[in-house]
Length: 433
Image (cartoon, rainbow, N blue to C red):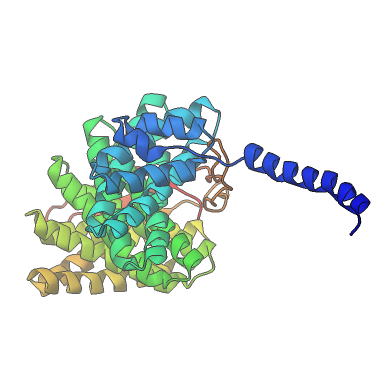
């Protein structure tokens, strides 16, 4: 090449180098020193505020805070509680959907905790249970303080925890069923204890939380290609067991709370399966089996009347199955029969695991099913599809959570030990599958 050729290419080379330099300097790379903030003693709430201000999405910020908290040996229950409580306030201030933001946060927290505990070689199940418990408590406390519908927020929190547990377990090679059970157990235990501490309707809130837990498990299993019935069974078992233990720890009526939890878990499973095109009967049977087994094992572990709690769980699963089937256009009799079959199997497995009288628990299941004479009003509105994950952004942007559909259910409960028939009208909040 001649002298003139070299002079021609020099400006081109200079321009090319300048463009590369400009791209490096002005690229929109987002950086937030989450670990540095936590090591400096900032709270999870302050760290979240900094991360969002520096351009991280809510998903990224919540996940990084949770995983770094595990790595640093911080109490994950407290960290998760601070995050979700802050998310309620931040989402409300920004005009975002609070329920959707909470679901996004708890899903990301759970995934972050699983990753952090896996990397650290710790007890992943225990970490997930603590995180889910704290996240649900924080969401409920934030909802009360902000004047939000507490049951809706509780459902969003537990749904996110279950979805995050399934996906996080798949991503890290953990046991999906075990991790999902830990997540839902923590979520409902947190729901019971938080609602009891602040004077809320414990039964209504734990029913919503259990509903969200199984819906989240169904959706998480579908999204990640897992066995939906098996994952749902684990979620339902964890939800009921957590409710029993939470009720016992906070001085609540254990049988009543168990009935609410098992009802919500089964109803959520029915609606989640119907919405995602799964075998509703199989998923319902698995959910009912898990709920009853969780009730037996939770009652035995906390020194409760196991037969009475089992009867309440069976009644709840039958009611939840009937209501879920009616709300989603399924065959109510067939779905209810699946629930009864599952309850019997769950009681038998729970009895075997805890050394209880299997015949007595089987009789309790039968009595609970008989007590669940339920008339379900047809839903007045059609719920939107279950929450879907939003695209990441630098602000709190989350999925659209279905508005709750309120279905009034009249339940006639006949107590065999007396001649008194008590008719109770309850209001059940149904979340879109």
